[in-house]
Image 1 (cartoon, rainbow, N blue to C red):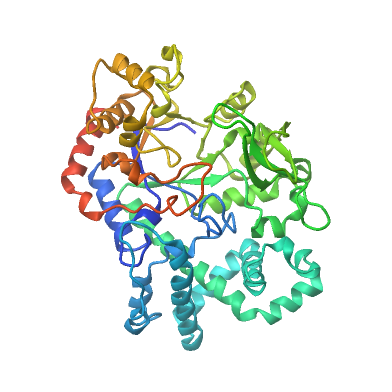
Image 2: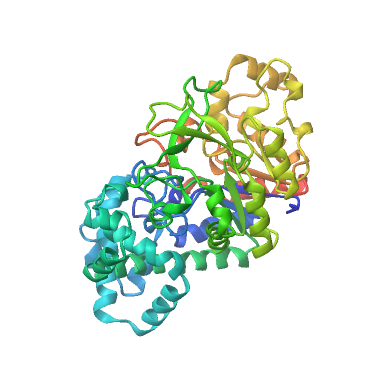
Length: 500
């Protein structure tokens, strides 16, 4: 894929403002798209849109295909008659600038229960016909996902490998009995997915009409506790009890003496090759229903991955194992054509990763916050003059501090390097704008900036701190009063001045 010179903004939908404690696919999403169009931006980049579980990370979802019920616009459901004013009377107080996922889990699921009950009772003919069509068209993943979630709820939220053997091992008789016993719960899960995809399609169409396309993330690995792992057990390394024999992570490096133990199940690439990489073809087909461009997180894992024996307390005892990424992408390209893919090729990248990326002409990534470290920083690959044309440059990503926060906390040597490089002495107030200009002026075809940097916010607006858990990650929401038309005007001016 060859990118045209352009720019965009990174903002996950959960960070949108709104009255119900989390961003939704409604009026505020449309307002943000309007603002992007006013600002001359071509792209809206989002993180994975899947249903999140423990830890609330969008990179650990219950399904690689499903949508996140938290994002469903409740106002639209009220307008359609699926909810009433009375349903909102007991609404808890929400922090307008921070997501409380625990409250969302309880309250929002209750609201969706009521919407489904109203639908099931009334049997609205138009919705029913559309719902039945959705179930038929998405059956390949939806049936397994709905059964998985219904079983998970029936088991008190336990992971699938802690269920009784029949359900855990997908015994046909056990599954048939579960489908009969949990028919209502299964239908409810499917209906919620119908609502999500209907609303997301409407948002994408609204964006497309205004010249805005969506870049969306897909994590390379699926979550251990996911319908993907449960329904496709032979595609991963599991033992007879559903326990992984090896798991994913990254080796020790400058940032961590023990590496990172992610715990995701690892793909059995040889098994996947036997059926022509069918699961991957279906996954990319599903992603293209959500996004215009797909950004693959941890792309280097398609060349070789860090395999850690299970169980393990750290990632130290792992080893690099070659993957069949080249064969997989060739099969996907033959089935689906040339895919619009951005490769997240950050970190320690070896020649085999670069070859895989370049053989398929996937644009890679660069992060300007990483450009000024080290002694002889002039050879840093992320400096603007060292960037490639077919590349995506970011000031920072969801895993970085905001640019203002980065400058406030940067090592003095990095600050010195920046001053030398730019012949300037930025203040905390001016740094984010200066870094944005460097990104937009660079030769990289696409420049993407987190909204936090456009709003010039500090560390309090950071989206995620890798390697940590707690109520500070994934919770940030922006103040709509900050999204001014004048800010869009200045961003449009920068965009036009830099030919984007």
